[in-house]
Length: 90
Image 1 (spheres, one colour):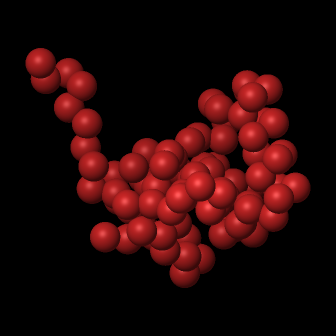
Image 2 (cartoon, rainbow, N blue to C red):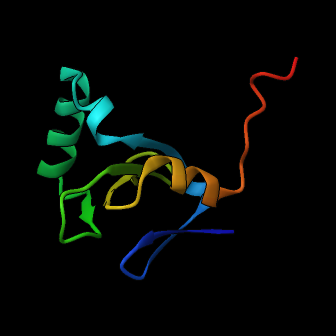
């Protein structure tokens, strides 16, 4: 199955490591450092001309990770993956 990130960009859902909201996660210095390092290594792919709302970390193996910047909200992308967590049902 594939996840549409916007602007004709698709990634395999099996390669998605995480979907993160830019406003909530970039408050942390660790996240900013991670994104900065990914940028330096040329692993950041922007799929938006606007300010990104979300970043998606994808990987296939050691050293093959990519970070996609998307204008689509993290909640919408999570729903598109088809994975729904039932945290409240126990």
